[in-house]
Image (cartoon, rainbow, N blue to C red; front, side):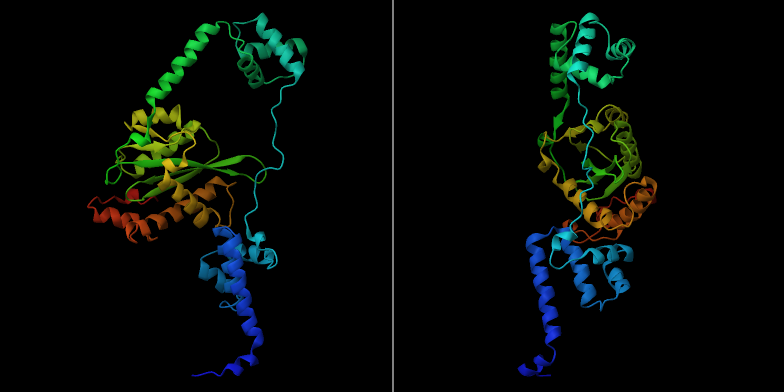
Length: 349
């Protein structure tokens, strides 16, 4: 039905409200991150289409009502940056400083006992001076001042170690990719700061071709946990992985290398400080943070509960969520169409 122009003057507030939210949305696009823009959309929906119904808004966006109330309470239209996630990094971090007195005492003890290891020197230090000193500080003084018994042999040993590492590490830039499922899996880790102190480590993995993905949260950054993650991934893919790609992190050494050898998995390394060597997994890491970590109502402190929720999300990601890169198929649908069906054990339950 045709509406005359002057009819709009009977609802000036309604028109002003619509304009206000449009302006806020435009401001958000220029100043906010994707995650904060999404929260702004929650607020706009609530005050417009949602008719101030929090439950309806939460259901529409698939979020917990508590999460919505948290951000609605925080919202301030004059300061949209309030919708950004606050950094959980501790304001004060512990500094491992070595005093001049400690350095002098360690240096003197080391020169007197050049063949002693750091643990023996620590024991002697405590016995003589009474105060405690960590073995880490002793090792740092030895390294910084090069207090080695045989400097020539030590330098040769260091040189051989570096050469061996260069020879062993095959760079991903040399890898020849194939359009084949499981031919190349990428592995990485994401570090989260715990509110009350400490860290949690989310190990992630994705197949280059099918985009099939897996992830699990751990309490430490150890190669032991990385090895556990790899064995779980190997089981879930029924041992179909052919090549493995990751960065140069310490978690991918020792126990992880041993596990790779046991499973006959060649390791391919990214170049140092080059995230673009792993774009597929970098994108998945962003997705898992935006669509899961930031959306759930629990933190990373409770690893057991977090992993339980994560498993549910992974099932949805692999079997329900359409992927643009796969022509809007799910990873498991893509695998089925490639005539490489996976068993029920591979649905990431």
